[in-house]
Image (tube, rainbow, N blue to C red):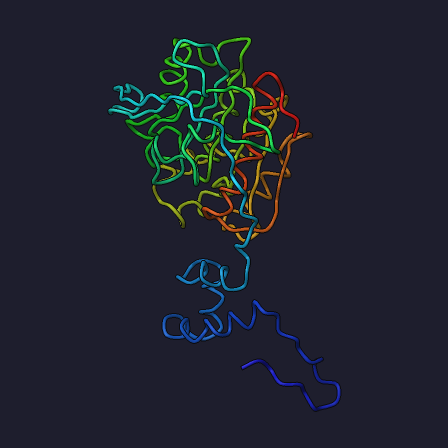
Length: 321
């Protein structure tokens, strides 16, 4: 029960409970069974116990604007597989073109990296890569660009023993696209990713700043310590040294001169890491830290401005956002 108003002189002031605290108190009845009273509610709120998503939905923390998506006619898309020496396995990929273009046409290229559990088909929220290229932002279509996606596994887009998805992107996938006229100079290459893919595009730009011309990371999965990463996903890094070598926070100096956009919701479990990242980014980076959760709704809200940001920096004619 909420604390009552004290009657003794000099006691604490009456406490006003917020809507979120009242909801937490209601969820506490469930949490008591597994963790014991208020401590259980706090564990739910921190995401350690099941129920944080429910808590966020009940108190509106995950509520964001639902964009009305308008598309032009969809262009063609080509999907296939190739054997990746870098990943030591067969990799699926999709190359999408804007309407009126096809393989062999020279276009700027957007590399889209999927999140944990995703693949080359499921790399964006609420839209396909073909739809992303046909999207209208601010009432206008995006300028012509191509987009490529590929299977990167669950290793957070950096090298693990016998599997190097980053090398697959830089040494195999992008050269394949360039052989088809995509991402050739003076045309440029942008990178877009969500969650694990958001971390991946930042790492890609930091490791290869002369290859990537602009980057947009939506809800990037950023940890600030190896212990923190191990507590959440033991397969993300193989060692503390592996974490240090692929820490996107300490690698931000490589992003100087590269247009960067990062977005995260304040109720995203990665929000503290993104805040640390934001403080380390070079001057001029666009950082959108706003309300929202690490969910489909927030990803979808952030995809149109992220695509417009990349279009402004890699495509011609430029789009004004």
